[in-house]
Amino acid sequence: MTRHADTVPPDYFTNLYATNPDPWSFETSAYETAKYDATLAALSRPTYDAAVEIGCSIGVLTRRLAPRCRDLLSLDVAAPAIAAAAARCADQPHVRFAQMVVPGQWPEGRFDLVMLSEVLYFFSDDDMAALMAHLRIALVPEGEVVLVNFLGETHYPNTGDGAAEAVIALGHDWLDLVRQERTERYRLDVLRRRPVTAPVA
Image (tube, rainbow, N blue to C red; front, side, top):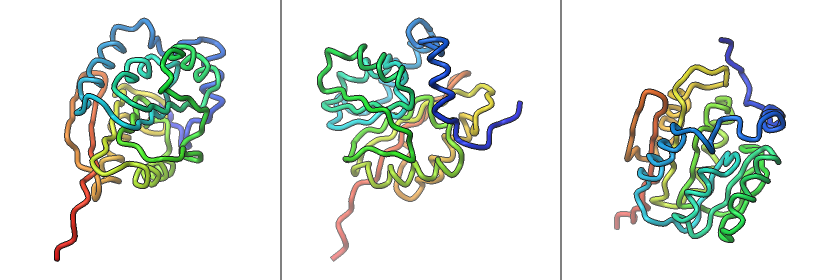
């Protein structure tokens, strides 16, 4: 299978949603439900002050993540996905949505949780590095980054393992790997920003 060299463009996702409003069966798949259970169980805190979810799709995980966040900003490149996610979370006023093409676009603010579920392998190596540069500025001390990556074969720019290992390598000097789980079909990694240490007198 030939792997794409560049980040998957927004039109790819818009066209997917035009033909199928739930192209990955997020609403009906027992596999997806179990994966979301594991993702939420991996969070170390009961609540987060400010979270951002990159690639929210139609908002199935967003809806489940919302009770764990005081403020949640969910992003996607595809307008149909954002519309569906916003409708799903219409009764959650602390959840906001924006159509945004990361990493060329990036939201303002700082976050103590960054959710990257099933999105990293869509990025080229250059865009992965740009994403990590944004995270380095936006993630507060002791904030967490959650990575969930499919391990099957795809034609995307990165594999699930390659994407996760790239983030771990790029963040080696400021992020600690605090949890790692692996199933037959996906891997889950939780990284935490190192706390600020006081200078030695």
